[in-house]
Length: 231
Image (cartoon, rainbow, N blue to C red; front, top):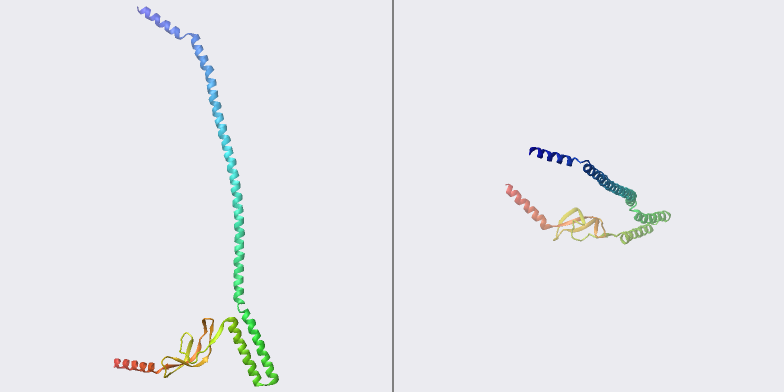
């Protein structure tokens, strides 16, 4: 019985080690593997090529975009420099015009005053020839009126009268004062005329003011009260 089992096992070993079967399997594997591996390699190569082509296209587009941006930046820089140069020229021109305006602001009034000086020269020359005081007086008075009319009509300068008017510290400068019979301070004498430039006081009038007598009495009374408190 043991001999039969041993014989069966030897037959199985011989059957599995048949040369034809093993060779067929090896040939089948050998024929199949190159096709599969070749297809995989071809697919990988195609994908690598497509990726390479895609990277090349993106790189070209990026380079073109960079070139466009550089050109745009160069154009904007050029425009900025031009605008900056225009602004600097404008600023210098404004400063120059301002200086000219300050230096020559009185050109027109000086031209008019030169004409007045010409009239004075004619009056002086006429007085030297004729030696007539009345003619000289009339000529000077005419020039004075002409000058005042010019300043008032063309430049808005006007004189205001103060004599007999209530004292106004905004318009008058009191250089002298006296006590008298009046209810409010009053201008009783005018030493220098006051002038206005349109609605603004250009020069205050120098005047003498009469102060109310009640103020003097009140002032004296307050001084007496102060002395009594001190005692």
